[in-house]
Amino acid sequence: MWEDPKTALVQSALMSSKVACGKPPAPGSTSDDGDKPKPMRTSAEMEVDPERIEILLARQQLLSKRQDLKVELDPFSPVVTWQEADFQCHLVPMLACKKPDHTAGLGDNISGTGVAYHRIQKKSEANN
Image 1 (cartoon, one colour):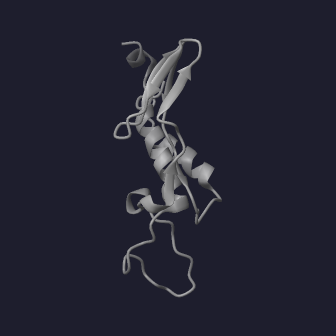
Image 2 (cartoon, rainbow, N blue to C red):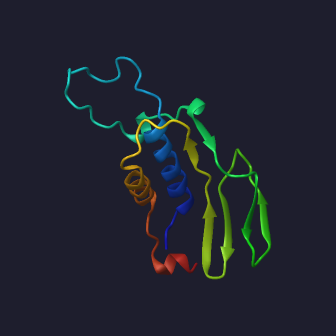
């Protein structure tokens, strides 16, 4: 069982937006070595450009037909969690890039970031 799935999901959603639609590095923040390829900045060094993104999720969502569970999304706390049978479910809106700079490798970045922010919880801890 994952210890902190919400943080992992939020960071994964942000990472894809940072890579596809991030602000360029500030002048002087990277060395200019001519034609040498520049290493990718870390997630902490990247920012999402708010002018280039949009949220593709309606304010009101039907989360479970079986439970007739509807929710109004709060833009200041957009992660929604609910229980569906034996599963704990989480909904995190994605920030869609209107004009992406990069698209290759986004899925790998999303998955890798999610795994990096997860910590596995021991079975005995999960049952408490």
